[in-house]
Length: 171
Image 1 (cartoon, rainbow, N blue to C red):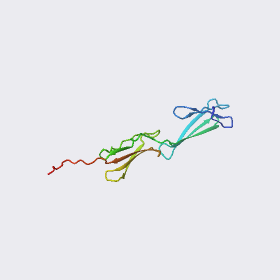
Image 2: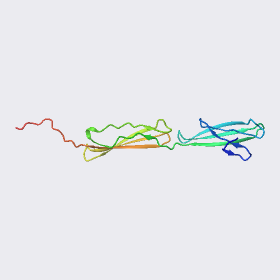
Image 3: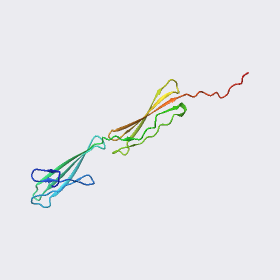
Image 4: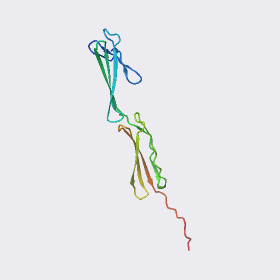
């Protein structure tokens, strides 16, 4: 093998050149054989989630007399990047008759095309029935459990006086 990756110690050298499909290309040289055969294998071992795995790549060079030299490359792929959740609406203070519906957020992820999004809403009662606080929490989770979270707090209040619709005349 020739190149800059490794020297075995018996004069055989390994060379590695990155190509588009992610596999490396090896070449080999031998003191007698001008056409050394190189066999490439790749084995994948799945990790804890869909986007984590280990590739074990092996190149074995064999000359005409059956002498061999091998090189093993281990590639560990890990998803440690959180998805990116779109922004939650701004916090707001509203009248009890104008509470906005919960927004639908989206998420992008470097490995998971369909990160799951959940939304919870927690109500904390205020001083009267129509005054309260809503805390909305959105969480995006990718296949490997990486998360991004955003919040919105809506303060609901009733500051409008009731309106009498029919007033009896003075007698």
